[in-house]
Image 1 (cartoon, rainbow, N blue to C red):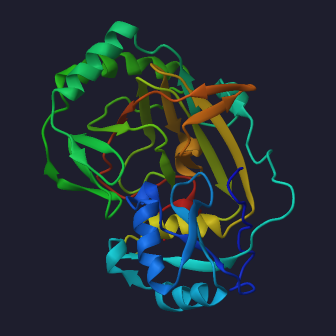
Image 2 (tube, rainbow, N blue to C red; image 1 turned 90 degrees about the vertical axis):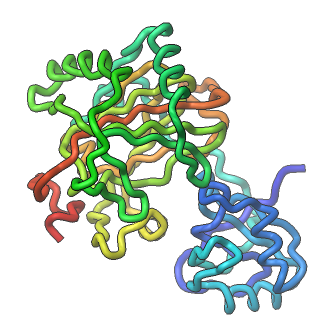
Length: 342
């Protein structure tokens, strides 16, 4: 028997039901289903906690009694919950769907930048050899990791601050490590795609993703980094999805955070959606429109569907993201998405 299916809220509070749609809550933000069930169980007997979608940041909490859902929504909606890491939850009623499940809620996955057709996005397959991949992984594994909720990271040059979505340019960590030098030398080849590509990079973030863990939708902060962002995939594959909204999604540095941005994205329905497959050892470049005006994210999947084939993600995926820290205001051509202009 499959898991129950629920409809998303259509706006407003919706009709009362025993099922709650809870945003900013789930495995991708470090909250297990057992923890969520325990907290919501304070308000009545919980039938189950289910993933609302593939994001890992939204769940359905299903009660036996409608009155329990009413009590939980009244007490928890829009308020920080100390038992859930101090996160502010966004809660609406949801109904169990009795109709057919839409199995086509996926976007065709491109395997080349030309098929993807987003200006400024390029990919080079087999950017490093299998031996070089092994050496790079050994090098990063020999260095200390910083633990986040669901993944591990390393920062070089400058630390990226996830709480403010920016870097402190006054806190220089030193030159980039020597193990990345061959990658930096080879990056110059991207200038054949776009002669304006900046290859003088001074910031490196290494991410390690366990199976099923992805990345929430975001645009790399304009004021933090210049216009060329490189990402080298190692060890395991994934797909990267892109969304361009009809109106710019921008949050000031005083309110900017992943949770708020994802909530705005969730409430927006007018967007273009595309995806590209990132195999191990491939290098992706985001520049121009693709860097400044498209949200990108990695769905929280363990299996991706590419050209009608199921591709299981590896036991880990490691990405090396290389950028240049911006020292002044951004002067890009996409002001609706730019924190330097608003």
